[in-house]
Image 1 (tube, rainbow, N blue to C red):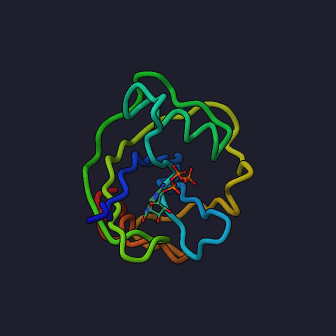
Image 2 (cartoon, rainbow, N blue to C red; image 1 turned 60 degrees about the horizontal axis):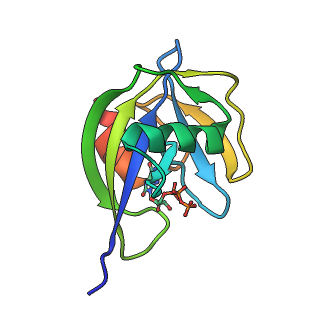
Length: 130
Ligand SMILES: Nc1nc2c([nH]c(=O)n2[C@@H]2O[C@H](COP(=O)(O)OP(=O)(O)OP(=O)(O)O)[C@@H](O)[C@H]2O)c(=O)[nH]1
């Protein structure tokens, strides 16, 4: 039987106004946390996160800034029949955040009142913790 779980490492990035950054990938309808799947060359979760933040946002994870928020799961936003299982860290980043090639759109939301469609994992498991 095939494994219908997608394991990801995800980031919560906040600003001084209490807003939180979400991304929408090309072809996706909903916004989700920055982050992604671990690759074989990644030493650990934070290496995955640093690579994904660079690839998606063009910024750098500040060493030592990551704090585990939660582990959670939900139906995957873009892969019908799959469940996403996430390890979620609150992180600080440095550098200018800019949508890189794989990202269609960035959006800062009020976690208590998102004004864009948000993936279930974020909506039900992550944003309520912020
Ligand atoms: N990164 C991320 N993925 C999520 C979230 N919520 C959620 O359902 N997913 C699901 O997990 C899938 C895998 O994430 P991803 O596409 O960001 O991973 P990746 O960059 O490593 O993949 P790729 O290199 O194959 O494009 C997404 O397509 C989506 O269906 C979320 O908050 N963040």
